[in-house]
Length: 88
Image 1 (tube, rainbow, N blue to C red):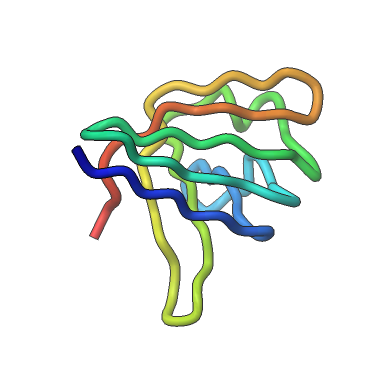
Image 2 (image 1 turned 120 degrees about the vertical axis):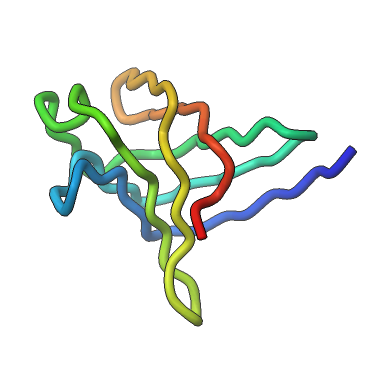
């Protein structure tokens, strides 16, 4: 079983090119075939986070990582989400 954890301070849930939620800190974890996202929000837009399709975009030194968002839950400033496999 593969287990991977990636952390960051910048990242966003996007609906098309719109920012639906912006993170101050986030963690993506892969356990087997399951990808999950947990993070602390700087801001979110209730309408945009309710739209589909959504994707999580996180910058890194050579570009960005992108995952499709399958399910998400926002509780206060915390967001958790089930992600699909990373997009290429």
